[in-house]
Image (cartoon, rainbow, N blue to C red):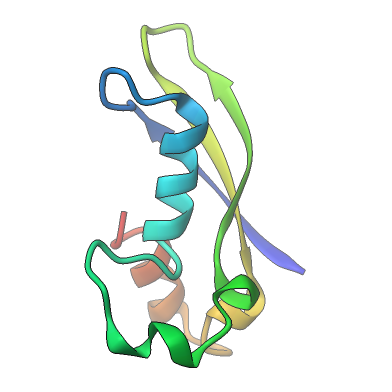
Length: 90
C-alpha cells in the first residue's frame, strides 16, 4: 500500500517532465543531492517514491506529478514524519 501525493512542478528548460517527476519522487523520499555513506546500508528500492503519472496543465511547462510513497518509508503514527517528507522536503 502507498501514500499518494500530487505536486505541481515546472521543469527546468530542457528537462523532460518525466525526469523532473522522477527527481521530485527521489528528493522527497530517499534521494539526496550528495553522496552519503549510509546509501549502501539500505535497499532504496523498498523505500523510494515513484512517479506514476504526469499530467500537463494549461500553462506552459506546468505539470502535476503524481507520486506514490511506500508506507514503510514513514514512521508508523507520525504525522510529523509524513508532512516533513512530503510537504516540507520538496
